[in-house]
Length: 231
Image 1 (cartoon, helix red, strand yellow):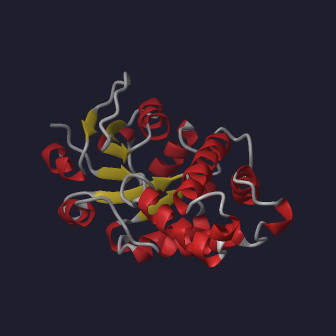
Image 2 (cartoon, rainbow, N blue to C red; image 1 turned 90 degrees about the vertical axis):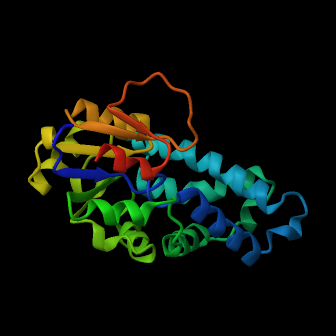
């Protein structure tokens, strides 16, 4: 077994359950703004349409085709317009509301705390995320994840987005790690797995849905508890 010293984790969709936390937040916004009054869409339809648009915008953001502010400015406008809400009636501050409520949610994937407690005495643990600086620390605090990690490396800190190898190089430099002694754990085949591979770092693909793919990975797991078999 290879001797790792530094374990890098992605945050959203890997440890912090973004989908559950986002869905709870969107339900809150649906009720707060009484979108049911339109009678043309349900909370579930609102969540589905918003999620599809948000994912598409995130792909553009990760490809450096739009800015963080553009992503935040347009996602609710596009979703609610698609659902038939007149543009003049779209709440002006709804994106800021979402951003303020979401990071206070605390749902994490099963075995997150158990596995991190197991790993903490044995390895140096870090986060490397494309998430925004202003909410990642709140997510960590709300879900009681802060004490596990030495360094939290965001794309804004590094000036680059995963899968750019320069972000991984920045993470190695900041933590004093080498690629050979490091392992990246994440749910995204492009950003986490291929990004780490191109930086010379071994990878663990977290695939809880057991999606079929044809990408070679160093390791693959469907439950975080399986990390104990690797580390």
